[in-house]
Image 1 (tube, rainbow, N blue to C red):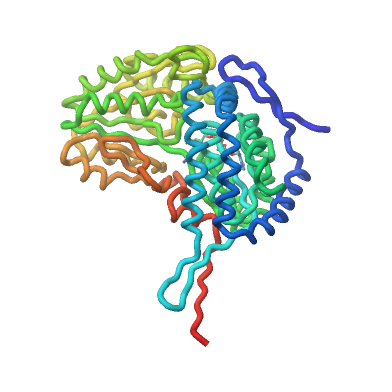
Image 2 (image 1 turned 90 degrees about the vertical axis):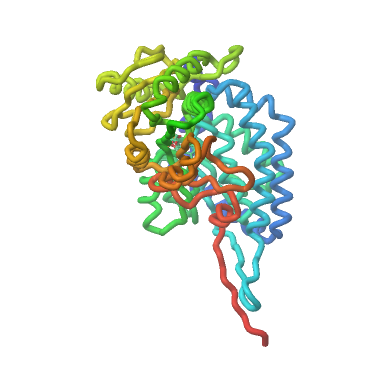
Length: 449
Ligand code: NAD
């Protein structure tokens, strides 16, 4: 009997569609079919594979408005942000394909050695719900350009948009090369344990650990893009207006449901009051509501469990003596109104864990050494930012993160990798080095006959 996975509109809890959950047999069949399809795909030259990818992404363009609306309805982000994600995917996919195509060309090392990049076989792509298309595409594109087949398991929160995305790409891709399976962690486990050669995963640290343990028996390749608990340091000579604007925008983007959102802020005590007040003022101008409400910029929280977690973090901070400048733990169902909390201390969940909600959490410091120590006192190390004057570079040098922003957000321009440090992941994507993670490097050496 077929079981169905229902997708809900997070703004009102109403069902918007469903997909059949993949059985164990279907997951195995998808992997087998992707292996077979990859044989012919691998015979194409890389440039030909890039062209096919470009043509498949071109199918998304005329569907942008329809896809953006579905993305909004299913994930909750407002239509402007959903359209932004679509724009990024439609243009970023082909760009990433071209860049992977260049990175994966054979290279000569000296006179008699050549580096070649061969396909691995089948890559399992497992993705989260917060940027359901962007996160999936980041992993699918380099995997395919490298000559692999792909079996993709989207998040159980966003199966409908993922199904549309794959259906459009598959109008051009060779049959069976890109497979989609549906379900939750159970189907994810089955995929990880199946006959796949690599697992490219974006999601939480906890699930990353489970996947790594399961992949160990056959030493499957891993790309792990995991969660973050990004710190921000605001130094005494920082531009307060600029820092406050960044703090609010970064904490509230995508309703705070972003891996690189600012989660905790350490501000020099001499400027703290001005900074905190300005943050509260800016935060108060944010509008909460469903995706299609005019002027909305904070959508619903993805599900009740995540809502409970955010409220729990705020309540914990209140109980431990935090000052609430805006919002607080009294919240309606489904939404979190913009919240600004001061006097965060190291024993609070807000400081220790990834909150993943629209909360600005601030702590004052007297000494920059203490701020750096607290910024680094985390297993996470995805992003970190510092706002300040001439000493900001020196502070940035001491921050333990894969991506650092100085007087701006993280994430480089051009073909920079998307990379975490510590337990925020490894085996990154993006950039020539990232694309090469999806291939087997072969060193071929020969002497002239
Ligand atoms: P999640 O880890 O709960 O789920 C991610 C995916 O893993 C889903 O498809 C889920 O069904 C699947 N899954 C769950 N258990 C599994 C298992 N045992 N084996 C295999 N697959 C399994 O994460 P989420 O709630 O969807 O996403 C939010 C998290 O993702 C946050 O921690 C966020 O920071 C992180 N994230 C990181 C990045 C990055 O680039 N580093 C980007 C976006 C999101």
